[in-house]
Image 1: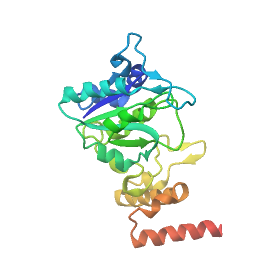
Image 2 (image 1 turned 120 degrees about the vertical axis):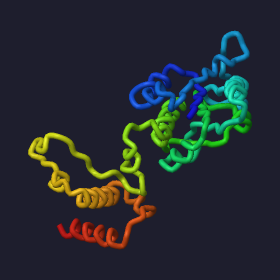
Image 3 (image 1 turned 180 degrees about the horizontal axis):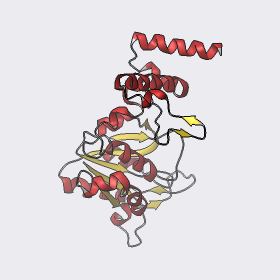
Length: 247
């Protein structure tokens, strides 16, 4: 899969995305992550990309032409207009299902804004999706873009070493991930749950499923509305709730 990140700060993006799992996937050719410096497409000798907004107001606004020229350089190179995502707190909140859907694309452009935003005219011209990573404002779109590239990349075959990793992660099946333990068996007086030491795979699977349900109820009860719980699981959860209330 090919990611093209339109940004004013390419070094910031590449330092974060060319390490660890994503770095290895890029070296193996599973991913192609490329930054496009919007300043390189400015049409003035000082490489300015911003100006004052019409109508007044605080701050500066990124101009349409440099952004469009940067986008056009990618579209012409790959021979089509790919999906283009603009990082903005005004967009839809990015979720795991979006990562799965976007991982099916061959090419993605991620547009990072700065200052007070980007001239609306170029957004209307090139943007296909408006997305946010949360209801807060950052200084630029680079961090959201990096978050999205990481989440999307994990859905691409060959990126993660363990093929079972995605299936057991939080948000898969509408539930948070179960607790995990490693050596030693006892640490600061806390012991590993006995079922995990039993070697009984069916019991371990049941315990992990129940712990995922319980953790989701404790930390993200809103997710349970979409979780596909069986009737026996719903009864088990009700018993856990009742025990909590009685204790």
